[in-house]
Length: 142
Image (cartoon, rainbow, N blue to C red; front, side):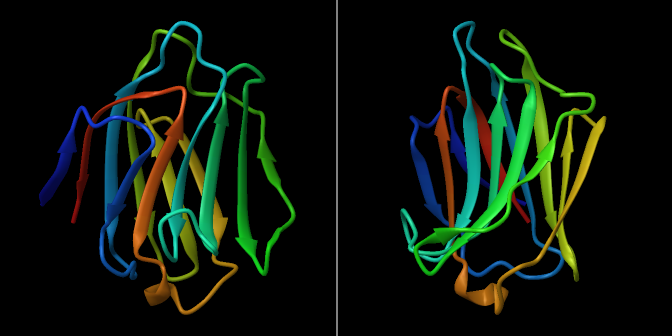
């Protein structure tokens, strides 16, 4: 397992190589007291142009928004409001696993989300971007 970064600044952008079935990203961090939102993206290049996986934690609204961005347009949002796993001043552990049919997200071993793949081939998505109101402690992948 490779440790990519420890306490990096945000926005954090990392070329993780192509995503593929079985690839797992581990993110640990802290939600600042004044946090409004932060997001995790798997992108084709730094800052797009295509985003296969966009996971937006809207801390100030207690909602998680999942989406993709292709051809200069966002897809249909999938909103998760049940059992929002984070609040300001929380430490968290997040796991994102690439599966055959989608992305499986776990936060603090409680919140389990699934987001179906909307874009292929997955191999074109090489960059991880984390941005917003979050303090990243560590990023690893395997």
